[in-house]
Length: 471
Image 1 (cartoon, rainbow, N blue to C red):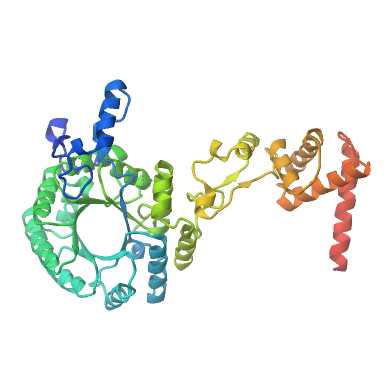
Image 2: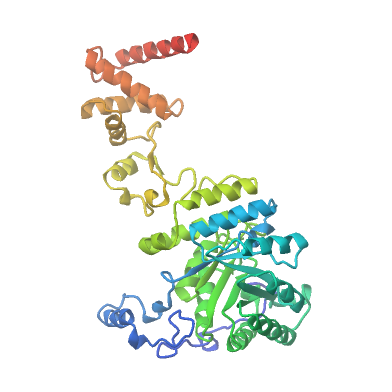
């Protein structure tokens, strides 16, 4: 649990944690929790491998859902809480359709109890006939539940704060009241034949005994999922693993996790949660949400692609990612961050000479993601002082010019000299290479003749300026 001077108590040693059996009781990430390890050949093989190699993965790692997960996309719920967000109905529908085309399994919407427009938007999206299941996120209150089930959603996500902070300063209810209300709301939603998830809020600052008790209670009455929420973004991967792993041992239903990014841990925590046995991850496009938001869809996809590219490629329409991010960025009036995984301005740009040479020989040397799988291309930057002659050679070949290695090295030296004054654009580099090639072919230039090259470049600039004036 998160360290905090005023936080609730937490286990001090392993004996206080719920043991997760690895015999017939292990859930292996399955909803019914009944699958026996003896029936899983992968588990048997890895146990044997561990006997031969003490550094092999542990049997408990087969709770991992890195290759068996669902995304609950919350741009239209959590994302509406972003400071800049104002989604009209048309924009919400466009985002929902784009997310559906990308292939997310669930789309979560703002509670229809929030406003009349929220209710109308919820009903409109439910009528689109999307492949993704439509969920709405409500307070653990019967009034909200009654409104939610009438909108046509496929499921209802119920939440209530369980930490001492929220019990004292937010809703003011004790755990007895929370448990009683949760049972009432869950049974009501279940009676309508739709999915229901129960989530604690501020899970990592809640008392572990309280958490496990209420999760076990709602699991027994048949929720589809229980949810863990790092509401203030205080958890680290080890804490996430411990809590999810513990919970995986005491409930048979699926486990959802909602992770805020206040300390920059959201993607790492999401990945770790899947390793520990979580089945559903909440995301939003560009990570938008309350304060600095939650696990970003693109960042999570990048992380999971690196672990199992074929699975992720088969699951999602990856080239749609850039379109979705541009759509949301425009709607909330922000730019896609330059360092954004996959779609950032420099995501597949290589600059250093050593990197460029290796990339040109084999892209896997400096890329864990393949840009072509996302409908993108890599770019080798060469108009700078760090450029290497191998990168320039590649550009020479692309331009169809014939130069020897010594000539290319000579041209590269000139590029670096000019780049010490200002960065050279690709057009600048191409012009220099064409002038150099022309000079070599005409006999006006040879390797090492700096003054001759300067004269040719000056002549070319003058001619270009004259053409511009007469155009």
